[in-house]
Image 1 (tube, one colour):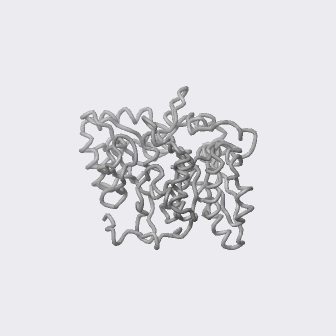
Image 2 (cartoon, rainbow, N blue to C red):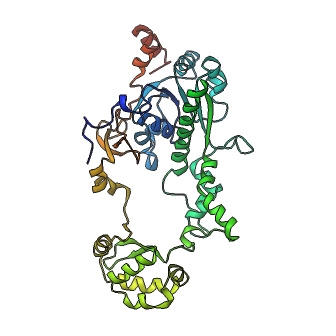
Image 3 (cartoon, helix red, strand yellow):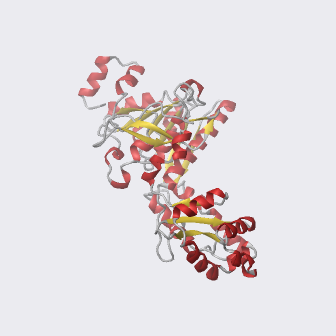
Length: 405
């Protein structure tokens, strides 16, 4: 059931309630880290340039970046290139428990916003840097998710042989931000013990290498290089996408001998069940070239809906082939509160309501919800500057001078 407003977690019940995070980030990686901390109850302040985070205005595949990764945050717009703006940003950062950034090496030092400078004032500060590469020979390269997928083996594993293909979402950016948040949480626990903060670093390339580590160890174990996923030797005899009689596609699997017996009984494949060539899962793997054409022909007698019903009724693993936009109407997500309403902050649909995905876990039986929709640019500038001790006239003077917006 979808949690009602009076049963959904409140800020006071969330684990990071009372924690202040100041976020100097853009794109996906750093904002993901901030969103993790924000969803868990932290006050997360997103520091944007006067013109706004670039992702507010991206087209195509980037159009969903800002509304997806910036909920539960406050926005303040500061011109860091202005000396007075950099001073305001430093004053704000000095009030933080955690500072996040994901800019090029040495960028933050130009404004006195690097860990070395801020930790002198606040030794308890936890500072999370999100980079393309951890310190080393590659650290000054410009990295993007697609760059590290290509150089880190993921695109090779995703595409067909000779056709490297990036994964269909920003896997390294998102996971890199999540690893940054994990590091921040660990540093918070250690700070509770030692009383001191520390710098945490997370990087796209190292994240990608972690993702393909299973294939590296596959080579170590077998002496055989891992084949790209579309050409891999599957460990399961039946584990593939099939085209049903109505032209719809459906993923079907039978990964154990018990499932194979049930599968054959359900689809009236008694001859295959009796065939010694297919007696065990490993036998079916070795005989895939003979087995799969027969299965494709037999299953084409059914519609995708019929196959799904039969697989479901017999607790066999299957999946329809879905598009992202179809998930807005997914009955399970709607019933379990996996989607929450947000107000879109920018673009032609600014002010309209949409569903957004929540983190895929519960705490105390509840999903971590949306307390603040993704903010409009500078929505909290006045409030936050008042909190730093500036009165309304001083704030207006900064606006008039182009220092804040």
